[in-house]
Image 1 (cartoon, rainbow, N blue to C red):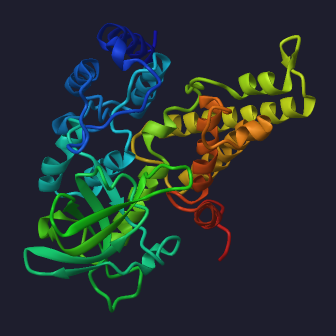
Image 2: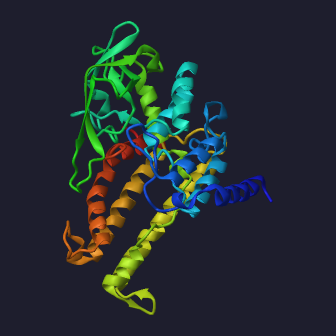
Length: 394
């Protein structure tokens, strides 16, 4: 048996023995943010065991609380955890992205202070990038940070800040030289979200949820020793973090391993369109679902190949934008199919006339419209693919 095969068997055996029953279900993944509380004893026990193994941040160095796994081993770990529906920690990937970025750009002091709490599941981070009027054209951001010796004083606003109402810390791009060209004069700083100079207002979306926030800074403080990278050179750090986001090993490792939880497209199609000898009766609908499933499977296998090609370490570069575009389109297509197959039953918002799953699918369909924008719009990703991957002229 190969070394990776032995690791898989050891991991499977360890999970079978140590993952509590209450931590094996398709419920939400978990974080250790101080503003969120986990009272379930099985979940707390599971977190303690995962922390001890270093598997909250499995590929990070053991000296910072990580597991020291290779990318290939991490892929196996994620597959085995998903196989038994084990709960995963740090679902808010902002925490994982800043950890990976600090490992690359952070000082020794920043790594010691900020990475272990993430690896222990103690803190939640959020990302302060987008601003009103500075979304796709992020480099036009105007949130200002004034140098006051040993700290910066920050004033301005961020928007679409995922999970800001729960976050303990933020990493943010701020303007430290207003006279420099827009891609210059930007710095990458870390700041405490518990301080009085930070105000957070959740944004209610059309599906009724509020995962995003407006974040306001009024004389907020970022310590000078929490400047990541060089002063006025934060654009480089910010771009690298986005590559970690679009090509994170946690998401890529799922390629070829993930499975649908709960109701599938086939289940709904057979219920509403009927079935003949176990097949969806509507030929056109059957072909649509087959096409979607083939595209989804191809996407996941390509993710897996990206992990295998990155065995030497690091994060894939600009090609990760391909995954962002494909994932967004697949999500939108799948949620649209769920809704359209139900006919008028897929248009419900509330009421006894609609079953619970139909209502959830309708809200998911509304939320998934944002997939083309969140994490960098598909238009921006296509520009990156054209310029950085295909080498096409401007």
